[in-house]
Length: 114
Image (cartoon, rainbow, N blue to C red; front, side, top):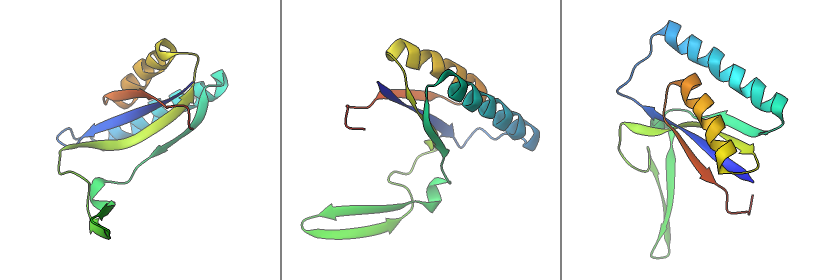
């Protein structure tokens, strides 16, 4: 089953350059371990929310607006898509991921359409 491990960034928590480099190294190690274990499907980091564009259909009209969908200090910063046997296995990877990137990880299963 495929799971999305979402990295939730809190903008009020600022890392020093050294802390950021350490986080990147730890996250890279998790990526390598996922690949070695055969659970890696793909992953990616996202640009800051202010780079987002929201496309919305309403009453037959489509509009685009700059900026994030919602104004908040927390936002999706990156993700992994993994393929594991069950939720327990996904949660085990999420434990490693939250430790590596020092951010909360939301775990959600795909609905089978992936």
